[in-house]
Image 1: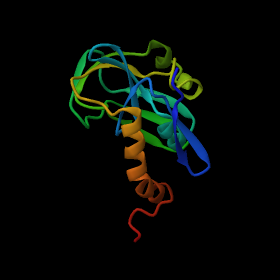
Image 2: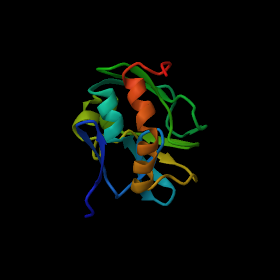
Image 3: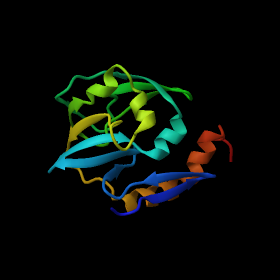
Image 4: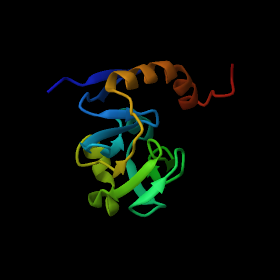
Length: 152
């Protein structure tokens, strides 16, 4: 197996496995059949969210979703955040293991902590493309993390 790529978030290494694709919304997509993917949070997004306590979906399985459509909420040590699909497509099924206990996201985000199955005809980023995206957005992300968004 190919070694994961790494993105440095200060002193923290966010591992980016090369056996899957990525979305600029910090989600990974692992193809299970052509055009159908398991979707989960990247190490980058989990580092920002920290421990996840609660997960709630605002859509049902088999729902066609638009790009940037809110599909649920997640509560973590940092905040309550809206969740969005990686692209337009269809949320086919939710991970049944997470419906009553989302702690699997924290323990195994690239494995059993996947969120849902998703169908799309959009072209996701490669691992290298996602690293390029992270590099281009890191300065702004640091400002957001430090609450300096409107300072310049």
